[in-house]
Length: 277
Image 1: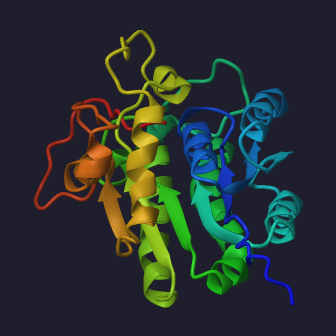
Image 2: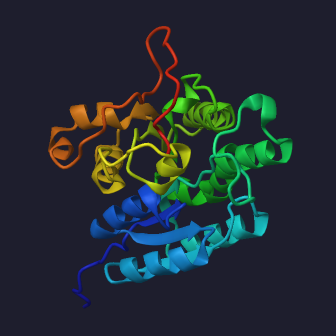
Image 3: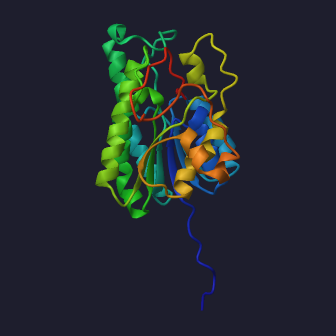
């Protein structure tokens, strides 16, 4: 008679934009909690470094490419299935301006936004996450899993210069809310992480001192508290989650710059947003 204990396979998370910033911080936090990982980003060299770091802790599959590419999304879903099927999808990859031109204006005004770049913004920040979710949904359903979409305060506050980025994130927010209604067996979250000391924020704020903003490693545990507590589907701010999760709040500090989720009433728009990752 076989009396060997039954071992439950480690859960699988698929994280986009995982080579740096919040995506990498979330990948490290998941690895520390025993998750297997499928990670992706456009920069192959940075992704390889992330893979090497994470492979010391857990099983990880790293696939470089753009989530706008249909074949690449299919390969990501297949990789997650090969590991046992995704229980968590983190749609974190994003772009400020969609431009492939070095030195392009980080946050062009809507009046001057090149339409090909604006299309790329919507594809990366809204359409591709929806498309990847469609592919991974069968796996998530099988595991009663969750979708975590990274949003921004720019999705709800009209900051000058953030129209393209914010509109893409607003579209993702609405898609998140609809998916939560349609997939009631899943947890579906949109989260505004607030300001963090990342390359994206530095690019969005040239010449500004962002050294006082928290590192993404301090925000990641707050976001993963959604999974640990199986928080109801919805849109959240990391700032509020930190206050509501005392066990996590001691390990995470959210910056106090003008960031935020949906407001209860009219909000005056500051000149700049500080929610880029």
